[in-house]
Image 1 (cartoon, rainbow, N blue to C red):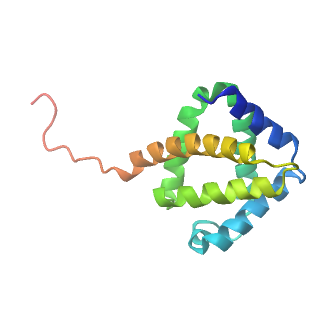
Image 2 (image 1 turned 90 degrees about the vertical axis):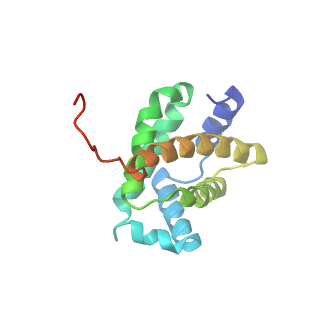
Length: 149
Protein backbone atom coordinates (compact mmCIF):
# COMPACT_ATOMS: atom_id res chain seq x y z
CA UNK A 1 0.00 0.00 0.00
CA UNK A 2 2.12 2.87 1.32
CA UNK A 3 5.91 2.83 1.46
CA UNK A 4 7.43 2.30 4.90
CA UNK A 5 8.97 5.79 4.86
CA UNK A 6 5.54 7.34 4.29
CA UNK A 7 4.04 5.44 7.22
CA UNK A 8 6.97 6.39 9.46
CA UNK A 9 6.57 10.06 8.57
CA UNK A 10 2.81 10.02 9.22
CA UNK A 11 3.33 8.41 12.62
CA UNK A 12 6.11 10.86 13.40
CA UNK A 13 3.96 13.87 12.66
CA UNK A 14 1.19 12.59 14.91
CA UNK A 15 3.75 12.14 17.69
CA UNK A 16 4.88 15.75 17.18
CA UNK A 17 1.42 17.35 17.35
CA UNK A 18 1.54 20.52 19.41
CA UNK A 19 -2.20 20.62 20.12
CA UNK A 20 -4.95 18.35 21.34
CA UNK A 21 -6.55 16.27 18.56
CA UNK A 22 -9.90 17.98 19.18
CA UNK A 23 -8.27 21.39 18.62
CA UNK A 24 -6.82 20.07 15.37
CA UNK A 25 -10.30 19.05 14.22
CA UNK A 26 -11.87 22.40 15.10
CA UNK A 27 -9.00 24.19 13.37
CA UNK A 28 -9.60 22.06 10.29
CA UNK A 29 -13.28 23.01 10.10
CA UNK A 30 -12.58 26.70 10.74
CA UNK A 31 -10.07 26.68 7.90
CA UNK A 32 -12.34 24.64 5.61
CA UNK A 33 -15.27 27.02 6.04
CA UNK A 34 -12.95 29.97 5.41
CA UNK A 35 -11.44 28.53 2.21
CA UNK A 36 -14.57 26.84 0.91
CA UNK A 37 -17.61 28.58 2.44
CA UNK A 38 -19.96 26.47 0.34
CA UNK A 39 -19.02 23.44 2.45
CA UNK A 40 -20.57 24.97 5.59
CA UNK A 41 -24.05 24.08 4.33
CA UNK A 42 -23.11 20.38 4.46
CA UNK A 43 -22.89 20.44 8.26
CA UNK A 44 -25.23 20.97 11.18
CA UNK A 45 -24.75 24.09 13.28
CA UNK A 46 -22.85 22.20 16.00
CA UNK A 47 -19.65 20.88 14.48
CA UNK A 48 -18.61 19.11 17.70
CA UNK A 49 -19.78 15.60 16.84
CA UNK A 50 -18.34 15.92 13.34
CA UNK A 51 -14.99 17.02 14.79
CA UNK A 52 -15.03 13.93 17.02
CA UNK A 53 -15.77 11.68 14.03
CA UNK A 54 -12.96 13.27 12.02
CA UNK A 55 -10.40 12.67 14.75
CA UNK A 56 -11.64 9.14 15.47
CA UNK A 57 -11.34 8.27 11.79
CA UNK A 58 -7.93 9.89 11.46
CA UNK A 59 -6.62 7.99 14.48
CA UNK A 60 -8.00 4.67 13.16
CA UNK A 61 -6.24 5.30 9.85
CA UNK A 62 -2.93 6.17 11.52
CA UNK A 63 -3.16 3.12 13.77
CA UNK A 64 -3.93 0.97 10.71
CA UNK A 65 -1.18 2.20 8.40
CA UNK A 66 0.33 -1.30 8.24
CA UNK A 67 -3.01 -2.84 7.31
CA UNK A 68 -4.78 -0.24 5.17
CA UNK A 69 -6.21 -2.96 2.95
CA UNK A 70 -8.47 -3.87 5.86
CA UNK A 71 -9.96 -0.37 5.77
CA UNK A 72 -10.93 -0.34 2.09
CA UNK A 73 -14.57 -1.31 2.69
CA UNK A 74 -14.86 1.18 5.56
CA UNK A 75 -13.33 4.05 3.55
CA UNK A 76 -15.47 3.34 0.49
CA UNK A 77 -18.57 3.30 2.73
CA UNK A 78 -17.44 6.63 4.17
CA UNK A 79 -17.31 7.96 0.60
CA UNK A 80 -20.88 6.77 -0.02
CA UNK A 81 -22.02 8.43 3.20
CA UNK A 82 -20.31 11.69 2.24
CA UNK A 83 -21.91 11.59 -1.23
CA UNK A 84 -25.35 11.16 0.34
CA UNK A 85 -24.70 14.31 2.35
CA UNK A 86 -23.79 16.31 -0.77
CA UNK A 87 -20.00 15.96 -0.97
CA UNK A 88 -18.84 15.99 -4.59
CA UNK A 89 -15.59 14.74 -6.14
CA UNK A 90 -14.34 18.28 -6.71
CA UNK A 91 -14.40 18.98 -2.96
CA UNK A 92 -11.77 16.37 -2.12
CA UNK A 93 -8.71 18.37 -3.25
CA UNK A 94 -9.61 21.44 -1.16
CA UNK A 95 -10.41 19.25 1.85
CA UNK A 96 -7.02 17.56 1.45
CA UNK A 97 -5.22 20.89 1.23
CA UNK A 98 -7.03 22.19 4.31
CA UNK A 99 -6.43 19.02 6.31
CA UNK A 100 -2.74 18.90 5.50
CA UNK A 101 -2.25 22.63 6.09
CA UNK A 102 -3.97 22.28 9.46
CA UNK A 103 -1.81 19.33 10.46
CA UNK A 104 1.31 21.17 9.27
CA UNK A 105 0.45 24.21 11.36
CA UNK A 106 0.24 22.02 14.47
CA UNK A 107 3.28 19.76 14.04
CA UNK A 108 6.68 20.68 15.38
CA UNK A 109 9.50 20.60 12.79
CA UNK A 110 7.16 20.01 9.82
CA UNK A 111 8.99 19.32 6.56
CA UNK A 112 8.26 19.05 2.85
CA UNK A 113 8.76 15.29 3.18
CA UNK A 114 6.06 15.22 5.88
CA UNK A 115 3.72 17.11 3.54
CA UNK A 116 4.44 14.65 0.72
CA UNK A 117 3.70 11.69 3.03
CA UNK A 118 0.38 13.17 4.12
CA UNK A 119 -0.61 13.85 0.51
CA UNK A 120 0.26 10.28 -0.41
CA UNK A 121 -1.99 8.98 2.37
CA UNK A 122 -4.77 11.48 1.66
CA UNK A 123 -4.78 10.76 -2.07
CA UNK A 124 -4.99 7.02 -1.41
CA UNK A 125 -7.93 7.48 0.97
CA UNK A 126 -9.76 10.08 -1.13
CA UNK A 127 -9.51 7.84 -4.21
CA UNK A 128 -11.22 5.08 -2.20
CA UNK A 129 -13.89 7.50 -0.97
CA UNK A 130 -14.57 8.73 -4.50
CA UNK A 131 -14.85 5.11 -5.66
CA UNK A 132 -17.40 4.48 -2.91
CA UNK A 133 -19.27 7.67 -3.76
CA UNK A 134 -19.73 6.51 -7.34
CA UNK A 135 -21.99 3.74 -6.05
CA UNK A 136 -24.35 6.50 -4.86
CA UNK A 137 -23.94 8.71 -7.92
CA UNK A 138 -24.38 5.99 -10.56
CA UNK A 139 -28.05 5.48 -11.30
CA UNK A 140 -29.14 1.86 -11.31
CA UNK A 141 -31.06 1.02 -14.49
CA UNK A 142 -34.62 -0.10 -13.96
CA UNK A 143 -35.37 -3.71 -14.72
CA UNK A 144 -37.41 -3.98 -17.90
CA UNK A 145 -38.12 -7.68 -17.66
CA UNK A 146 -38.05 -10.36 -15.02
CA UNK A 147 -34.86 -12.43 -15.07
CA UNK A 148 -35.37 -15.88 -16.57
CA UNK A 149 -38.42 -14.95 -18.64
